[in-house]
Length: 441
Ligand code: GDP
Ligand code: GDP
Image 1 (cartoon, helix red, strand yellow):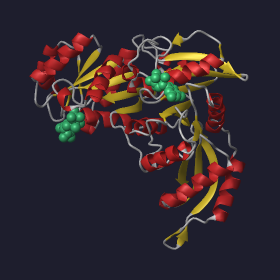
Image 2 (cartoon, protein in one colour):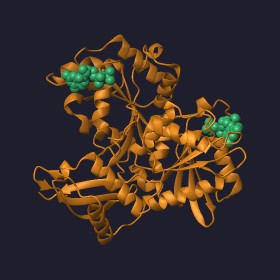
Image 3 (spheres, helix red, strand yellow):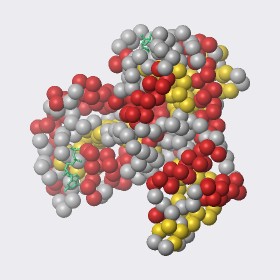
């Protein structure tokens, strides 16, 4: 799975600045979706074709008191789950007692750490960083995060640390994932939503092809199974099979693992708890799924014992809190009783087919033509915006590239009209759809 790098350090050393540097290269698929709660703490980035996940741990050590308990717990967990911790220090203010406390904390946790001296802009690097050798963390990586200086050298060192044999190919988790058969499905959701129950229900009903295999040294497990002739691999973040006796759901929940599973999946089943309603954490998780551009099925669990109008209520609640997500199928299920659980896999299959749809240039260009005939693009000044032809630019999620003139002036409302038009006519369900515009002149 995608390697995890945790940024640690006292407040103001530049963690969020570095976080932004490392994650901003990623195209924001859903940047302008209203109501999306963005988690500024977890992000996915790519340097030189090497993908990784970055966690900004916020304030660690001494700051714990000001964080709420759940966040502090997730911070500690993120550090333990990280493949590599970057300890940031401030080259301008010099070594502090707090830096020392954090360094010894990291040593006590037994994690691999790399020391990063930030804010070296305008300083003599050797003399500014000399005193930090006292932290005993080995070679220091000097950077100026605000200016992006030293960041790619830093990531090269991260890359070397994670792939010590200089084995570039093996470091790409994408290729390693291909050995899992069929549609890779991640079940995500907040603690107690019913993920473990649902996984057991899915597997209990189906023939398990292989014994669960640990996907990584951490806890997510890959479980291949088959149903109606279709291969699937379940990515189990809850660690049900191995840790069935962990009763504290909060304890087994991990944002890091969840994000890794989303990244590794083709389709995400987001498990919502109908009885508890939609919480902020659900919105965060959905934001992560959308950020990753993953196909999505909503499983509204614990339907048993609820009024039949719950579907409308949950849908309204989702819309009010999120203002989007019309594209995903919503299935009311009871993991406990097995109601509708089988249908979830139909939804997964449908979402997967939509995410990996292949579209020809003539087909897309014809559709574009009918869209424009139905609703012409607006005038800019005296000239009408022209949309000429369209072709497919990618899969999972599908990308439609539209060529024309002055496309940069297309208003958001028209972009949304086009997206809906393509979505409806191509019958895309359960996948985000990305439109890109190219202007000839
Ligand atoms: P965090 O609390 O560790 O997340 O720190 P921030 O990223 O919020 O940065 C704290 C302050 O340091 C901000 O005012 C940044 O603009 C500043 N800063 C971050 N990186 C650099 C740098 O490379 N050089 C300088 N001179 N200032 C920086
Ligand atoms: P996880 O933390 O997401 O893995 O959640 P669990 O699968 O451990 O379930 C949390 C609790 O919700 C357990 O007590 C389950 O028995 C209960 N639960 C799960 N699914 C259902 C359901 O469909 N209906 C009801 N009433 N309870 C459920």
